[in-house]
Length: 433
Image 1 (cartoon, rainbow, N blue to C red):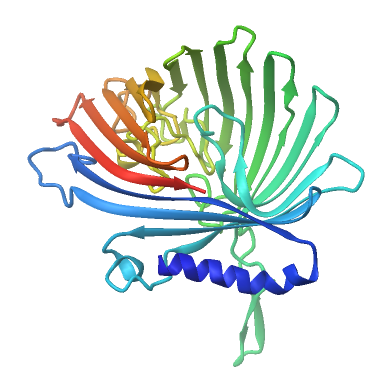
Image 2 (image 1 turned 90 degrees about the horizontal axis):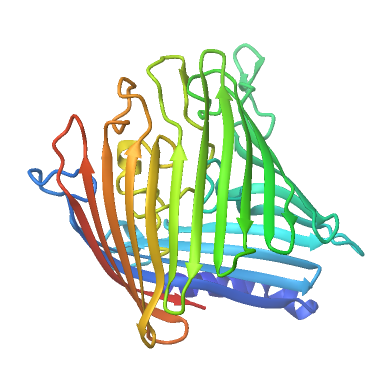
C-alpha cells in the first residue's frame, strides 16, 4: 500500500503544475485484487511428486489516470503494481521495493479538428477482434492507431506497432586502437501493421482484418530460427443478435509464418451461442486450432505474435482475478494450446446464476483434445484429451467490492503418460474504482 500511495503522490506532483495552468480534468479508475490459491498437482499432474508450493497469495493494482483537456484530446497513464506475498523486495517484510511497479499504458488520444478521425499514439492495448482473446495479437504494445467511421455502417482502423528494436540510436562501436567504427547489426526490428474494417448493421456485426509482421533475424524473436521471418494473418470476427435473447459469435483466422528454412500455416475458428434466461446466461461454445504434423521443416500451427487467448484457468489462463498470471496451468506448462492452437474444445458455460441477492455463480464444463499428429514432436496430440470443470462464486460486499471464490478441476488422459487429476481453490477480494 505504501507503493500505491507513493505512485499516486508522484503522479499528482508531476502534473500538479499543469492542472493549475490549464483546464485539464483528471479522471481516475482502476482495480485492486488480492487472492490466495491452494492447489494439488496444479502443473505437474503427478500425485507421487510433492508440489513445490501448493499455496500462494498475490495481489495486483492497476490505476489509469486520464488527463482530459476536452472530449477531443486526452492523455492516459496506466500504472500496474504486482506483488507476490513474501517474494522480492516488494512482497517481503518492509514492502518498500519498487521492482514490481511498471507503466502499463501511456498514450495520447485525440481527434483531428472537425472530424471523427481518432488517433492513439503511445503504449496502449492492441487487440485484434476475437471472442476469447485473439490467438495472434492481444497485448499491450507501443503503437500508433488511427480509426475513423466512413459512414453509419462502415469504419476503418489502421495501426502499426513495434515489438523489438535492438539498435534504436544508430549506435556504433569505436576501436580506439585502430580508429575503426563498427555498426551494430541491422535486421534487429520486429514490426506489425494491421487493418480492420468493422461493419455494423441492425442485428449483425462483422469485422474482417489483416495483419502483417516482419521479424528481423537479430531481434531474438525470429520465427523458429535465425533468419528474417514474416507472418501474415487474415481473419474475421462476427456477431449475430437478430434472434435476441439468443445470440451467436464466431471467429475464423488463417495465417502463415515463414523464414528461409521453415514454414507454418494453419487456422483457428471458434463459435459461441448464448441464451439469456431470467436467472442465468447459458453459452455453448467450441474452438478448433490446427496442430503440428511430423515434418521437420513445416507445421500446421497458426502463427502467433503476442497472443491473448484465454478460455479457462487450465486452457489459456482465464481467471476471475486480475491478479492471476495470464498463462494456463496446463497449456503454458506443456507448450501446446496456449494460443488456442493444437487443440479443439467443446464446452458449456452457465453465467450470472443468481438465487440470492448479491450472490452469483458461474460454471464452465469443457472437453479438450489435441489436433497434432501423433507422430509429431508434441506432448498433447490427437490421442490425448482432458476434462475441466471451473466454478466461480461471487458475493458483492459493496457495489464495487466483491468477495470471490474459485474452484477448479482438471482431468488429463494422456496416451503415453500416467497422470493424476489437478485441483485448485482460491479466495480473494476484488475492488473496482
